Length: 200
Image (tube, rainbow, N blue to C red; front, side, top):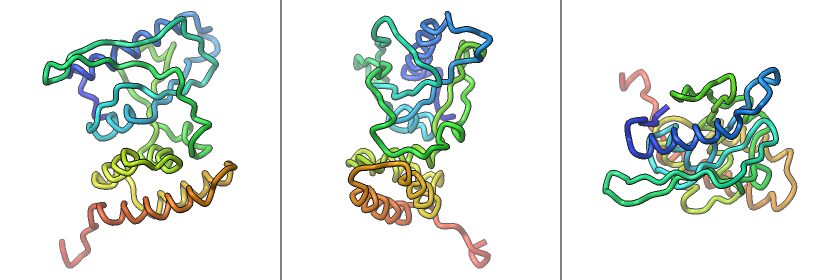
């Protein structure tokens, strides 16, 4: 995990999760912890340490009702006022996602979070890249390139995972297939080249 809990953003992130946990304090312990799955820009930051996001896209393993907005104000390294909030409008059914994305997510150990109440998880780099393919705007392309540059994804795995995810979707699939082709070319263009025996 690349989150710096000593940074202003890291402290704000930790505080948002703490407030989410407080809202879940009444969850029945015998049912196990509520799992929080982090996607979007917050997931990218957790995986790479790059690009802080002003919102946290997250899904939960159970139906959750929050009384109000969960937001934390903080100042960034340049002294500018910022707000980090839980995006309660995030909907994981409106974009491409593999059916095993949550099962294959990575567990995070966040200080102050009681894992008996809430288990925080982040999408794997590969599944995060897949979620970027249906919209595939400039920011999504940049995020996929960041994951590729750090060697966290490769084009072959991305294509297989994305095409498997397509099996469960309806809509303008041809546009997404085109996005997959473009994304794989982007990944190949920026991914670190593996050194062969002659280079070692």
